[in-house]
Image (cartoon, rainbow, N blue to C red):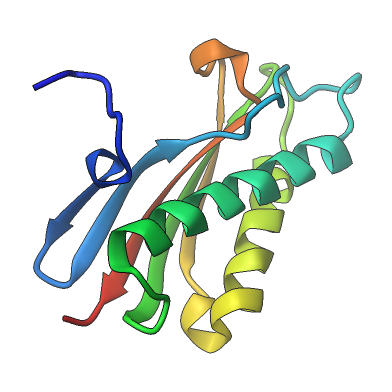
Length: 133
């Protein structure tokens, strides 16, 4: 088995009714959040990542109807040491979750500033999703 995921199922592990999604990041959005990189730019990277997670979820389940709750979202933001607002960066992904799923899309969230992310992506997001069947 390859250590590099090559299919949607490799990015997701199921335990009972919970799906654990490996971290995903936006394509083409690189850099470090600082005074020079505006939060609005990184907010859009979070939304792009949310769309990627939705695509993987749809591939895994075949439908969104089986989703009962977006339980948790973990947003890791590539930041300079003095940047103090990682939650703002991951808001777009959270907003998208509520837009798509309504109240079941409301989740707990852990936003964290990280000193470096793979390939210098601006944000990486993991999620835990409760499903039926």
